[in-house]
Length: 181
Image (cartoon, rainbow, N blue to C red; front, side):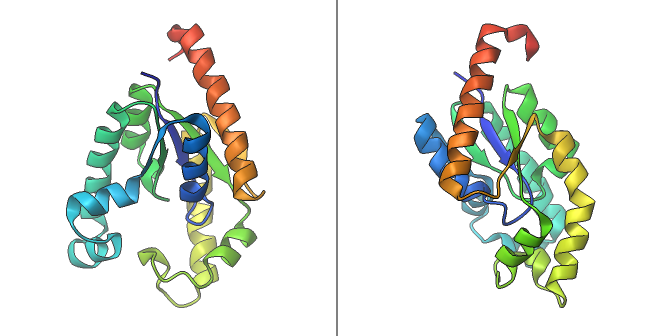
């Protein structure tokens, strides 16, 4: 069983879209961590935030990371805040997962997210400022959590091919040199 390919990055960077295509290319299962949490909780992420708060959501997220990281041969799309917690990064790495950061410039993210109504953290006035502030707070943490940074401004199918190639190469290297895990 090979470890998971975990995609992290800021909301709107393409984790789910790229992840689904990457999973097909690599002949792996796909898991969107937020959807997994919603199914387990029986409510949407927005409802979890509204009814139970962000702290409760982050606890659910950590439990989901621990469960998913034990399964192998998957491509996992994290939520935008998942790898901001070191315990989540460690849980992925403990089980042989590779974390790839989908790096997209701030201005592109702002454009992609300008009409989004599904993300609780963005439902505030002056959305571009909120996005910029969050981006500045998170960017260094994404880079630290990642084993590899993938420049992800290209169309999603090109990014997915790049991610699949990187994932296959890194997983082959780990199988040949297991002491590096």
